[in-house]
Length: 156
Image (tube, rainbow, N blue to C red; front, side, top):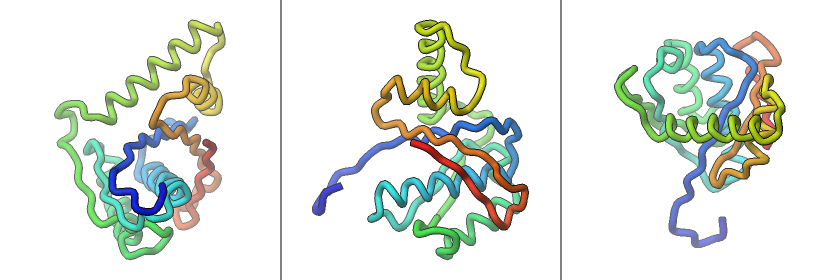
C-alpha cells in the first residue's frame, strides 16, 4: 500500500492442508501462518481481530492461551486484540461463501484439464491458476508435533 492510503483492502487467506484433523494445534498453526503472511504483505498492520465460525477447534484452552500470547506481542509482529465467533452451526458467513468459490474453481479445473486434485499442493496450483481476485492461497504443513515450536510452510 502506498503512504496515505485511507481505504481498506479485503483479502481472503485460504488455508490448504493435507492434514485432515481439525484440532487446536492445527488452528494455532493456521493462525500463526496467516499472521506471518499478513505481516509480510502489509507491514503497517500491527493489530488484528480474529473472527471464527465457532468450531470447537478454535475455542479450546490451548488456543485461547496461544492467542493471549499473540495478544501480548509474542510470536509475531501482529497483536491479536480480540476473538469473536458465531454460534456453531448457526448459518454461513462470508468465509463459507469464499470457500464455496474455491471448491467451484477446483471443480472447474478438474473438468477442464481432466486432472485429479488429490493433495494440498495440487489444490494450491489449481486455485492460483484460477486467478481469483483477493485470494491468497496458503499451503500449510505440520513439520513438528511440538506445539511450542509451531512451524507452518506457506507458498503464494
